[in-house]
Image (cartoon, rainbow, N blue to C red; front, top):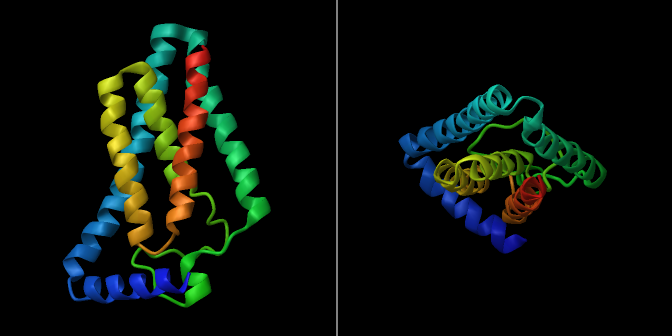
Length: 165
């Protein structure tokens, strides 16, 4: 873990010499979250209009996954990188604990899986954004790499349940 903090401290110092990059990182983090949630709302609304009650998988699968992931996070209550090392995260976050797995990355990934299920080209675009969001969350100092990898794997596994419907 010390090597992680050394590497992150070097990265952080480099970023502090490039304040525009910090702003881009923060902007990308916020915008990606907004794009994901708006995409999900549009997909749910579209499926509800086109398929009526048969659209339930796009609500049920991500919803159950989100609840289960939240329970796991709360029970583990893993500290965030800035709690253990005293680093100042590039993405401002006042929350303590609940770092593992990343719920932002899980949500983005499961939304991407919904999009893959509905229209795969759109899903591919959202999945690329999910991977970039995972990188941004680590670069921003609010998650360890293991947190985002676990969040992404959980999102993919959860999303695979869509193909049962």
